[in-house]
Length: 130
Image (cartoon, rainbow, N blue to C red; front, side):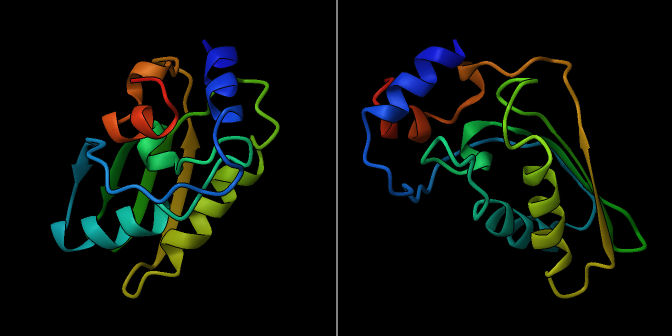
């Protein structure tokens, strides 16, 4: 499935495609941080796919604790993803730049494994998969 996603991305312009999609990510904690966190993570892109990682469905869960720390569970499109080290670091840095957030921890999880079905409808349309 990853190959078909890459093929779909290759058919699109190399520029990033900003989306106002509807990816549904489970969120726990202070809801005042939901939109700033979503906006921050939507600035992170897999360099090979012109859709942000939020809309790709790579973010599985966000939890804001009472001490204003954030824990993110995310995955990658493949265990062999060339951005495996860079993407979590960028997510962490962007979330920690949000006013009021003390620190962020980003955990890579492989269960459930990511598939294109996790993508928002907007991402599928942007990549010509819908």
